[in-house]
Length: 234
Image (cartoon, rainbow, N blue to C red; front, side, top):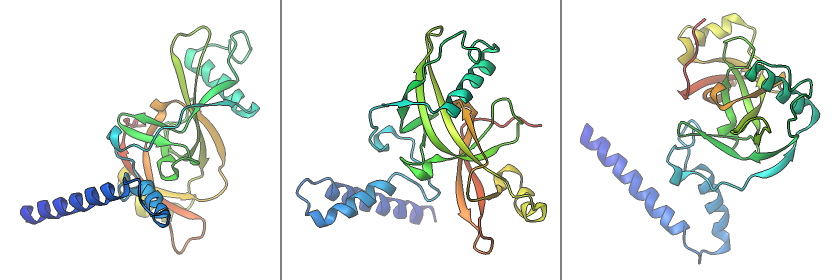
C-alpha cells in the first residue's frame, strides 16, 4: 500500500542520515576510514550508476588542472572547431588554438553529472552522437573533459573525449533488446575501443547501465538511462 511504501522510504532515509552523521565525525578510528571511503563512493548513486542531480550530493570538485593535448586529440579538436564554425581556419592554423587546456573531473548537464573514467567510472558511461557522423547513438566512455578559450571567441569552449565501443554484429541477439526500441538497449563489445570522438556537452544523450552477459564473453548489454537530450529520428 501507499502507506507501507512511505514508511519504507522514511526508514531508509533515516538510516542513511544517521549513518552519514556518524561518518562525518572527526574522531573516528582509523579502521573505519575504508568504510567511509567506500560509503562516499556509492552514497550518491542510484542502483544503475547515475549520480544524483542535487549539487549538495555531488562529490567534491577538484580544481581544474592544466593538460597539454596529445597530437591526435589536438587534431580532432581542430577538425571539430572547423565543423562547428563552418570554416577551415583552424585546421589551416589561420586561427590559433591553444594546445594547453584546463582539464575537469566532471561536468553537470541539465543537473546530471558526467565524469571521466579515472574520476567516477560509472558516471563515464555515455550514449552520444558523433559530430559530422550518423544520427545513430554511439556507446562509449568519457576519457577526458576539458575547457579552453579561443582568441577570436569570447565564450569558454567545453569538449569531451570519448572512447567508442563497437556494437555487436549479431542481429538475432540484438533483436532480443532492439525490438523494444531505444528503451530496450542493445549489445556491445567490451574491450579495446574502436575509435576516439571529441564531442560537445550537447552531443551527449544519456548515461547507460552496463551489464556483462554471463554466457557471452566480451559482450555487454547497454541500457539507456534518463536522457538529457532528444534523439533525432532517422
